[in-house]
Image 1 (tube, rainbow, N blue to C red):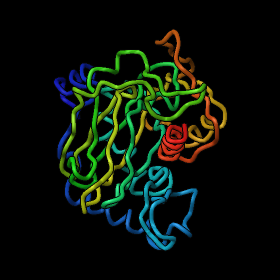
Image 2 (image 1 turned 45 degrees about the horizontal axis):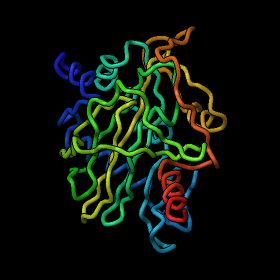
Image 3 (image 1 turned 180 degrees about the vertical axis):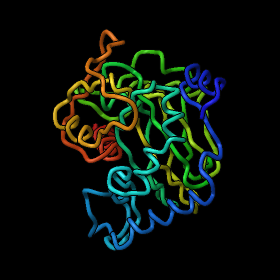
Amino acid sequence: MLTPEQIAQYHREGFVIIPNFMTAQEVAAYHAEMDRIAQGNTLASHDKTRMEMEPDQPAEGMLIRRIYEPCTHYDSFRALSESPKLLDSVEKLVGPDILFHYSKINMKPPRIGSVVEWHQDLSYYPLTNRDSVTVLFYLDDASVTNGCLQILPRRHHLPLLTHSTDGFFRGKVTESVDASDAILIEGAAGTVIFISCMTPHASVVNTSNQSRRTLILSYRATDAFPIHCHIMTDLVEKHVRLVRGQRSPVARFTMTEFPIPVYENQIASLYELQERSRKKEQAA
């Protein structure tokens, strides 16, 4: 359960960090489950509906970049997403009526774990209001060298930064970013970070010999309805489920306008979208 001081920090800074939210035993159990999920998958042969592989490895390489929707497909992760301890904290941030939105595990394997450029989560899935929170669990000790989370504080009340060029959504901030006040969030395995859907965040390549696995879940208030963005909205919304309270019969609007992402092509993940954008910039 979040304290009043932690709730105030979330609303003031756009994030709050809670060490030791998971026990060492819980972290070890999730490690074992991830090992089971990963077993037998290679770059050349893997279930593309359940995971994404790191591209810069041999065909027989087994380094996974992302596991899709663990809280939908795997019982232990689903149980966490519906646990009273976690939902009690989420309720303090978005209210008593809560939808589970989506989940993913970013693997950040040693020496190769991919970069994630500055972005704001709400840019991907416009909603009628901003009562949406991203919950990020460190499943390994996170440091600067293995690509810990970076956050730009106190930006979540401002308008959305530009994430598009040439009329198409690029999945990253495309305007100049002043990162002079960026906070690098190092933390031990079991740490959780609650992040506003409007808080800019990023992470760099893992240059260490240690993994930096993170479990990421998103929740929103039931009166935060999706603004439909064609097939990409449909892909995300199929995993949405009520986890606490009641569904709202009305949408609550708190913004007079919000940019709608226009996708140039269908993409599998943030990684792929940002990579395509970088290639376009290099070719220009």
